[in-house]
Image (cartoon, rainbow, N blue to C red; front, side):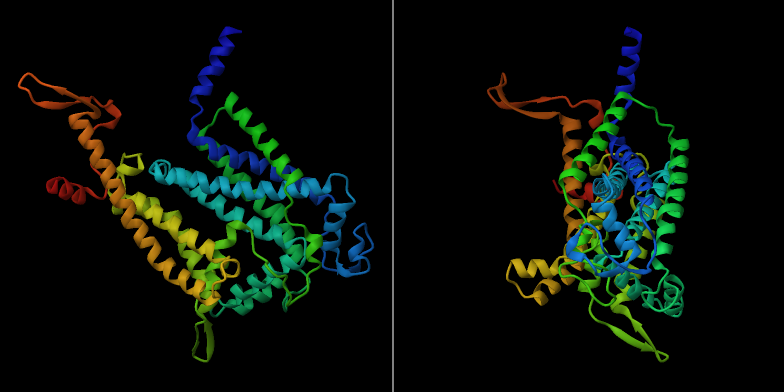
Length: 441
């Protein structure tokens, strides 16, 4: 028994906090998969029109698709159906949030460098696949809210030059909204995306070889319990309040999932630019925010490990303050994403603060361009200052605030030696600025 306790203790100490977000992502994916299997037993991915005569009397006799009717049946007639729907939705949201947090942890600690670049690429792929799975899952209920997502998908697809119209006709099987998009989104959501994500998790496990520890077991059950509580007490996606999908209609205050807020915000603040090229319209008002911005953002995210060494010269530094350039770029990226995300609520901000909608929109247009630059400059200066303080403490010791009189009648402060991990460092990518500051001081 004592040997077993010692073994468990050693495993617990080996379970670093840095793997916390990755564990939560895996566990939330497991919950999403299990709850999804339950839901697909009752869901019918068909756009065939029927009349509803179920338990929700407010929609009695209303024409709707079989997809929407089966979603209502799951919510009101299947035992535990609403609970499983909400757990599934919350688990999907938590999965994307955990992947984002894990990527941030890898980025700011330099965890993407060789030989871990492939791990970084896997997590970026999981983030993109999770977003696609979230969008495809939001389409499946075929309610008025999912119809809004289909409208955005149609508009963004049509904005692509040359192939946009043909691509839209292929996706929807004809004119919008068609009769096959629900079935296609269903198989993408329940078969293709889960298979690819499971393969990526298997590759990640093979590369990292994680071990099961008491902390990881507790974290699994804690994640499951948290999702169960959220599914029980926190209402999410009440499709019966929105009604069935009607092409060309959208409910007031409709917004996408939080992870797609940046796309919605970019579409809202982009000026209505449209040009004619060789007799064909080029709608930059949709193409830039809907295709180019997210495409460039995720491409840069995927290839950044290849650019980091050239940009920062950093090879071994793990603390954010020791890599000022990288930390500044990361903070600028977070600011850019956050401002686009906040811009998705420009109408709500204008309404609640009694400000002109145009004024709020123009604020975000300027802030999206100026905010990341200012954030980079401030963050880099802060990192340089912290690194300079660490170097001073490593050379002269930490200030204690205690003043003593020496034998000559003078006064001096007692300094304590700093532990070896805080030895003098050269700030990656900002060595010139640090040396200049040191000479100036």
